[in-house]
Length: 492
Image (cartoon, rainbow, N blue to C red; front, side):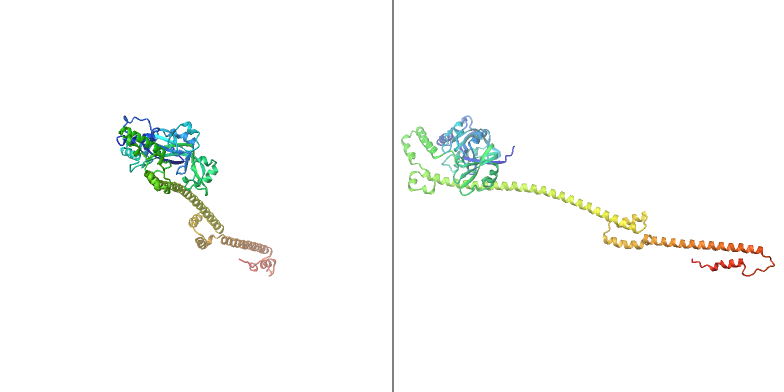
């Protein structure tokens, strides 16, 4: 079923047609009070049905819940009450009857009104309903409803009818402090002003008072759907019964006449009925005087009963407000819980993303540090692929301190592969090779000189006769002496 944005209830005292076997005088009284609104049911044939009637709510007048329905909405929805269920305490699993009739009556007198009459009314009037209780479903309840219609019974007015309405839109009505009729107030339909003033509505936990002289009430408008009636012992009563003093007077007079014809005791009529002119209603404790006590003790009883009912209604109203606040708090708590769960999921997701980014950052920094270290080692040492593989495996997870220690070890282990050492050795080697080359050249030069000397000697020997003694200091000897190897200083 569709869930409505808002709900409200309008309560009233329920009256029933009382069977004659219970009390024929009360049966007559019931017919006088609600006869125009009860469904057309043949009770002789349908002994399992209990006809009931009551005012569902008063249009154009705010109730104790701080809600009100105007003429337009009342006319639009009154027939939508038909065929709706009657249940116990708004428990839809405990249906005990149904609504069969709807109409209108005058506020304060319950005199029937026509649709044409109410369409033009701006003042208060009743939306009045009739239905049946299924005795076969709950015979005990049917008996209790009959008792609640008997002013002499201890259960009198114990059972009330509470109507629940669903709706989505509302206006705000501003009224002077004690005013209840919306025709005397200001209707606020502007969305921004409604949002500004709704904090004062009782339905939203407000106290109704906008300032010292004005109160705010909620006017139900738009699409309004009657959701059913709940029979209850503790209503937030916003409709004060069907009978007023005037209808009671008419009832008492008719009861006297009917009882006189039935029992043939017409001579005692004037002794049994309180004179009409002496009937009065007590509105406050100050109205209880010697005169009022002499005139009508029932008026005092009515006053006491009214005060007790008012106290009960105030308690019910406070209880309903508390339960409503509790329900709203539960809804708020559920909403906050869902929001917290959603935020927590987002937080976990963000944490995972941050952790992933941090890990990627660390991996990049580790890789960069590794590359820098390997480049530095490549610049310092002449490494083979095998060297690089071993070193890379050692240093990949090292922090700066461990790497510094490891670098010192490498300077010892790879001292022979240090590029500076290698370059120095290469330079020395090249220098030695240059010197060795010079020595070889010198030796080759010396060998050439010796060859020249030997050839010269041979030539001399051939030119000089054997008998001739060569003089010391011949050209050959001079060359030999001049180019003797001993004359050279060879730096090896």
